[in-house]
Image 1: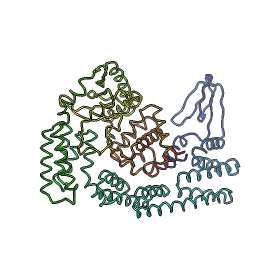
Image 2: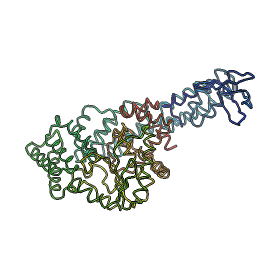
Image 3: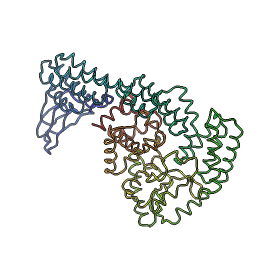
Image 4: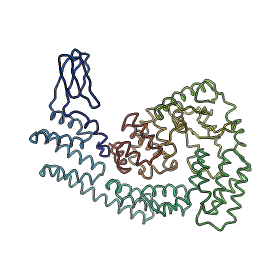
Length: 590
């Protein structure tokens, strides 16, 4: 598979190597490759990319020298199938040394053909045309030129049909098909094509406004975020501002109360409808078990909403009032387990605790299971912390609550029915576990994991997944910057079998969520949860295998403060999100 965006990264080891490769066979049977710069009766000096090795002559069993042009041709042959663009560069270097070398000429022609074919498979038409022109300049009568020209012409026509079909679908009101066709059209355009990005931004903004008119606020939020990722202008930013309260609800649902309060404070001074931030503060209090404060906040937000004329700038007046009144009634009738203390009394006290782990307090139906799961969680936590952070953070113990059954796990959801948080993200019925920030019995903030004992994948997949979310909370700066990455990273610590299932399902699906939309999602899309998790896993695996463990930690460090597109450019040499999407498609569907 060709990865031009990584060309420099891939060629660095090659450029650092000597022009010719010499080989030393040691008496022990080992082999070393580099450039021999000195041979005496006492020693042999071998130059390698990052220094030199000095061997005693008695250690050397055999010395094999290789001509420079033979080395270049051998390297080119080894790269032809995997990376034909590299092979083109190597064969060209060989021909500079000997323009009459027939093997190098034939190899260069074959590498050009493989390169064009690889670019066509990835729908990179502009680059395919450039590569084909280079082949034509080298050998105008090559028999593959005419068939490749026909294939490119057919692809160009197909690209045009995708665009026309997308526009026609929008006219018919079939927004889903319109977006799918435009996404396919964009992937056939050159990387970074402004025309394609503007068209997608306009299309997602159009679909977002239709969703807003239909009252589908969550869908509207996702489409406006995608439009912004594609470069949408001021109108898109205004639309996103209107929906900021929904973004706060998403953060509240994830359990990050401090982050939610910061967002609320940010919009409190500028949001056009004063009822909205008051209402959001009431929801935050509700989730903390502060029922009296929540009831007061719901009442005040309802009063403020009634004083206003129907708002055209903020969330709809009726929606604010409906949210406030329905949750107010629910809070009065069924307080959320009467606060934190009641929740612990009902769901934790009947369980057996294990305090042997340095990092976890595990509560389970039996002390044997609590101890076993504490050991699993501790091992995953230590290993992942070293891999992701380079250290094991010194933090308060993480609380793991292992419910006896799935039904008990669902019943423990502290968000009562009728809350405005219902429907913002996937309900607990559709999850296998959860990790969130909450308050302990003494009122201190802690990280809690909830799982259930009759989960057949508990120790192999579910618990390691949720432990990674705890590691993220304890020191990963990139946490919560991108929802797909939070979940994708967690899935990489599930079992090998789970990984194979996820990648296999994605390949079988034969489609992905377009990257600009995918990376802008702030919560799991309810209608595409399976596809979202499988794609998040596959993309995390793809990025991780691009470099060494040190490269991976550097990538995570950069991601904490920079945009995703800037990070992949600096860490991996990938020029753009479009380029990454093409490379990923070539990898996952190869």
